[in-house]
Length: 317
Figure 1 (cartoon, rainbow, N blue to C red):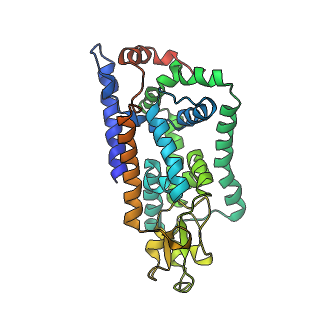
Figure 2 (figure 1 turned 180 degrees about the vertical axis):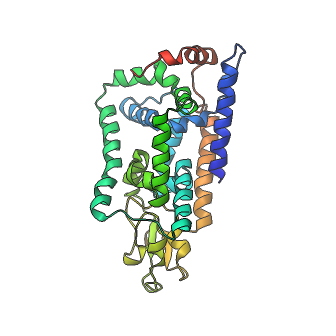
Figure 3 (figure 1 turned 90 degrees about the horizontal axis):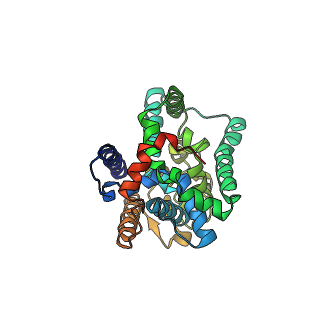
């Protein structure tokens, strides 16, 4: 709920910034909420690849690179918790499947012969983006990142939702309906961001671990898991589909039979502790980036306004 509130605040602040900037009034670029960059994951992925290839950190959407990199680091340390604790779309997905569970008594499950190939789709989408970016020459990558389209990409994203077409509405309605019947439909089958974090989570030392001596084999954990995993049949959940949502741990009737721990239980994370770690990591990282002056875009307000005035003439290069 904290991240939902922050997301709504960012949206309202960005709306206000664009509305004021559309007039002739002078606007300080500091009124633009830097965290809106978080909604440009492809730009952030390009910035990260550019950083690795050149050693230079892009200054066009710096907050995006910071948030994107932090999400990867957290996945390496604490699994794919971004999807179930931070992502606003993940929150909507959760509300949808829980509403479906209340209406129908349960959520539907794709047959295995459909589920497996569908789960590969998000990795294919991710592979397409990564392949497309990696094959770009460094000069072309830099030209795109510092070009007009990328500088105004946040406003273009806003315009997409402000003037959403029937195709866009249909897409979101279909995904929403499917998410009511099938838990985490978008996250499970289509989200390339989740796919990327899932890959990094494979190397995480943290996982939901089962103490066989304390487990009663009741099966409650498997029924509660929205990602169709069964913690009751393994020592540790290493699947890329685990989003560290703690649903299985909350459903477990045996104390400490399931826990989120590091190897040999040297570190135990309760539901509350995990949430605090995630919130504090994002808050402190944002404040540190701000203190280091790597948080707000380097696009001056007058240049941003000039791009905004001819935004519909700027096409994807």
